Length: 155
Image (cartoon, rainbow, N blue to C red):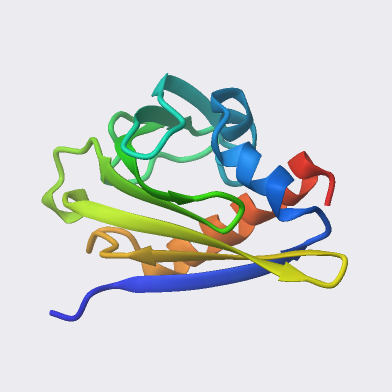
């Protein structure tokens, strides 16, 4: 089976340094990472290369439950900062907490920050996406997350 991946990009009118910093601060990540109307809870966070993190994404009460979740309204995941290149690249290795085999395995999320006129081109590449996650849903989640990141950093 071919590796499952997605790539989503967005221009953000903010400097790379500001965007990079938003990835290394637990409170910031809890604010901008949850897509759409979800909220984030950070359980552990070591914002350094090799550092571990654990987080839950919580669905709003009025949203229907989705298969493969940690619980009815929560997606919990953990991971580590696999690679950090200041102001250029953030690589997360993440694992979802689910009893459903379709959501198991380690997914790699690489964020590339490229200089652009008036800001930064931000590209998120997700690799080894678990089979239980529709690629279209992953892409949409990344687009929503980039929108929240842009708002958070003022771009």
